[in-house]
Each structure stands twice: as C-alpha cells, then as structure tokens.
Image (tube, rainbow, N blue to C red; front, side, top):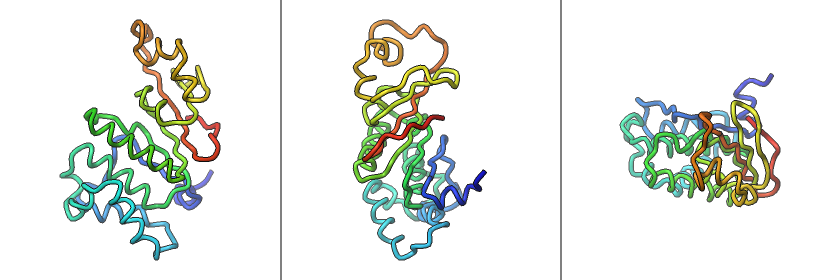
Length: 194
C-alpha cells in the first residue's frame, strides 16, 4: 500500500467531500499547501495564475481566512488546492454537496473546463444529470455495487436511467440514493470505480 504522499507524487490528487479547508489559514496559504510535494517550484506562480483564472473570487479573497468563505467558495478553494499539486488525475468527491444550484452549475462548468485542458477527472456525484453531462463514461452504484455502466451519452439517453435516476417519468421507488462514478478523460475513459 502506498503512502498518501507517494500517491500525490504519482499525480493522483483528491478534493475531498465536505471541502476540508484549513479555516484559520488564508486562501493563499491553503493553496500553497497543495504545492507541498512538488519539486517544480518554478511553475508554482503560473499555477496560482491558473487557479485564480478559474476561480477569480479566490484571488479577491487570497488574504482572507478560509473559514470565513461561503460553502461554494470553500469548494472552489478545495479544488484549487488540489490543482496546485499539478495532478494527472483529479478525484472529486461530491463537489456539489450542500451548494446552491447556481454555484453548483459554476463548479461543474469549471470541472468541464479542467477536463478540456487535459486533466483526467474521476468524479463521485449523486446528481446524476450533472455527472452524466460532463463525463465520458459513468458507473452507477447502488449499495456499493455497480448496477449500470457505459458511455455517459448513452446512459443519458437510456429510458431506464431517465426513469430511475434522472426523475423523468415516475419517481424512483428505491430508498437508496444512487451514486455516479464518472470519468472525464481527454484521451481514454478509465475503468475505475469506488
């Protein structure tokens, strides 16, 4: 089993569920934590510009304690901190959790943009429609088991998926909330599941 710092060193970085920012540290200090394992310090200023380009509000609040940010801003900071590690694979766990619909739309727009820039993303998300709209491949899990998988575009068109997971037709009779594990890879969808 690899230690977390070795996993990050291989380019696999997570923005965890629940944001988990360092509340007493400033926005900038939180972002700097993401660079801890990097050896290419000369590229860090460019990555600050990149993160601030995706999340301009973080630039405006860079000296502010992270604990005073709104939930959406903290989510942006958690993703920005992960990006500061210069990931090859970005793991996003429930990025829409607890966010207002407008902020969720903004976050998912940025996730799509990151993927178009070449970042491979493994996304775990209960909002099936959002996950399917930005991913290449998806796995639908119920009670920890894969119940459906395939190209996201195909699943989005499936009548079964529409009825059971997207709220089209009748309501889902299951008490179990499905989870989407979606991959967005600019070159090849990876067959990975939670």
